[in-house]
Amino acid sequence: MSSGTVDAPPPRTIRRGPGDPPGGDGRQDGEGHHDGGRNRAGGGRQAWITIVMAILILIPSMYGFLGKFIEFVHIYRGTDGGEFAVAPIMNYLLASAGFFCMLLWASWNGMFRDVERAKFDFLANEARIDAATQARHR
Image (tube, rainbow, N blue to C red):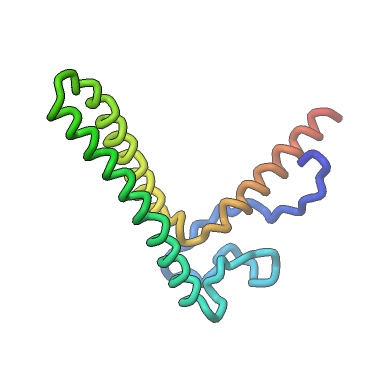
C-alpha cells in the first residue's frame, strides 16, 4: 500500500473489558468502525445460517476424515507390512490436535467476538510501515 490511499483507523491499544460499551475504542458506529453485525436486526438469522453452513461443511468433512482414519487403522491391524500406516495415523492425529488447540486458543483470546478487528489492525500496521518507509527514503 505504498500509494497511501487507504485511510486506516489508528491502532487499538485499549482492550475491551466486560463492563465497556460495544466498540470501546472511542469510535461510534458510522465512524469507520464495523460492528461485525452485532447491532443489526436479524442477527439470529445470521447465526442460523452459520450453523447450517457449519453442518453442511463439517459433517461430510468429518465423514471423509474418520473413514480414511479407520481405513488406516484396519490396514495397520490387518495386513502384514501394515506398519506403514502408522505415519499417516500419527499425521492425522497430530494435525487434528494442533488445529483443535488453535481453535481453543482463538476462542479463549476472543478472536471470534470481533472478526473485523484483524482487518483494521492490519491496515493500521500497513499504514505505519508505509509511513516509516517513506520517512526513511526522504
